[in-house]
Image (tube, rainbow, N blue to C red; front, side, top):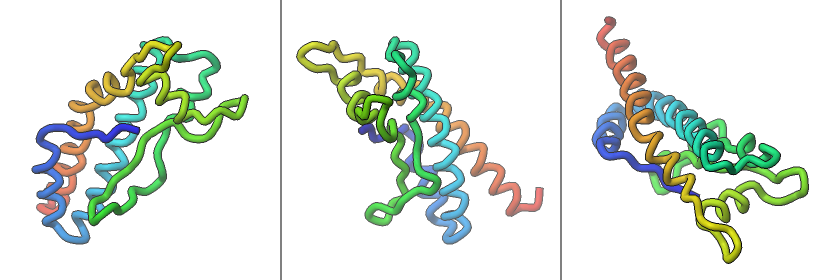
Amino acid sequence: MARFNASGLEGLIREVAGLGEAGEQVGEKMLMAAAEEVKQQWRISAGMHGLKWTGDMIESIGYPNKPKNVGGVKTIDIYPQGKDRRGTRNAEKAFILHYGSSSIRPTHWVDDADEAAGPLVMDVMEQIFDQFLRSLQGV
């Protein structure tokens, strides 16, 4: 649904990639922590936009247990999973609520969530990377 990108993130990713296998492990840990921050911001944004009827869609926002490799780049998809009580796909509801339809005004709630998550993602990823570097130095 949405592709998350934050300025400054590219340089951090290059540094981690240059560390080989150890970098891959810390990179996955960074991605998982970042995914959790984005997930929380999606839930907050959905609530702030009043998108909660039963709560099924908001509660279903999640991500896989492990990043996947797409074209040599580790990624993790964050989106509403599964179906609601009536069998409607939660990702479909999120898409329509975000972009709108002929009868529903767009909210752009995902854009708002991703914007709010940007600084949080950078902070958590930098903290994990700094921890990793300190562990290498024995500090």
